[in-house]
Image (tube, rainbow, N blue to C red; front, side, top):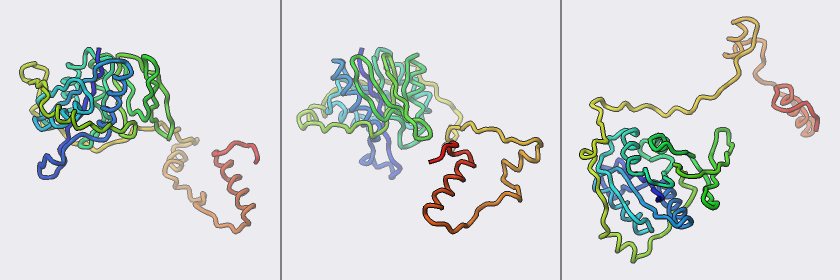
Length: 269
């Protein structure tokens, strides 16, 4: 079994100038994480991408940093996330761990790692901000809404995605960089595998929408009262009050108001 790192070659909108192309900080962190896990578990670290011929520059950079093998699935930026995940998953089936960046800078949906996990029927831990190797498992910290954190123990097989702050990609030595310039890269043609199914319909672009949050339903005996609570149209409710108090009295007034509004408990300080 191996550690597989999935990266995405991105060409910024600069008149198609490939000098500005490359992988994101999140993908760099994914590569460094994969290399560290492979070294700790004595496994091979392979890197794979879906992209054009120019994407091999990033694959060679990964080989120079220590990756053992590189594969490029020939494809363009017009592939949907589901198509990309299906192609990647077909070549990650024997992996102990699949490491991805949490999102790419072009579309940024962050859905590919979850789709890969679904194809592989593997566990997943996405949006990680810390990864620690503990024996044969990983101890990871995941970012949640509201500033909360979740700590998980990840076994294998699994798919994880990391943020760019998780790790800084190591600097490749000159000898490895020169050797990677002529290293072989396996090129996979999707049209010969039958794994790709292009849609004739253009993919619609949708704005990013944050996850919906559960809020308590409005209270009130009548529909009018509930509407007033939602829209805050009650004329009897004041929207502000100006008071002139000493610092001590002002602090006490704030604490009293917070308790009345339900933000603090009933205990006194």
